[in-house]
View (cartoon, rainbow, N blue to C red):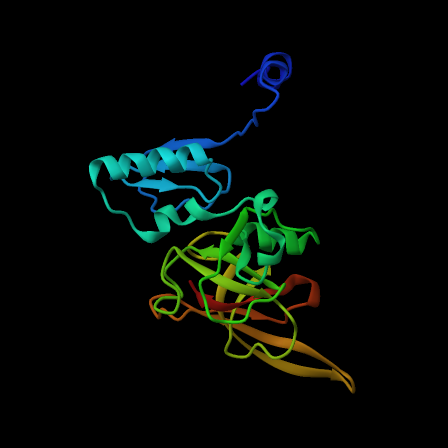
Length: 242
């Protein structure tokens, strides 16, 4: 939309200085059951399902909740997951990483890691787990069926940023230019990790082959061979579904 910023600067900001301007995208149609892109605030698919985006404005959340209450409609837990996510500026400091964890999108985490940047924070969510929390943990949504039954499609999960050590048999979030996830077409994926190493010299090893295996055997392994160090990164380890 041409001159949209000019309207904000000339009219909205001077006359409504206490109000915050939020831009979001609303979509109608398609058969999608999840919203992956953080720019999309709301989706009404062709089956009539209302789907909130992971960064939907409070106006959308409240409006949908009121509609559901009025019509006595029940929804899945994931549809209103972000209704109790607390913005960073409102979060009590002592609760950070003690009862609540930061919420990111997996795309933001993987992209930020490859670019050595900090991912965009969507807010803070109560972890709802007995596991001890720490500052390396975060919450993100996993989209796709390849890790079922361990991780159901659309599940929100706790991850821990990679701390090194053995990853054999663990479920991890990886980012690589050599990877294209068959379900999301992204350059990152959540899979179970296995690798074969070979000795290069006395004190150096390299990854001869990396196998990223789905738990759902309807999907194929992702096999990477002769992977150079800069082309493959284990970003985080899966801890639990919440």
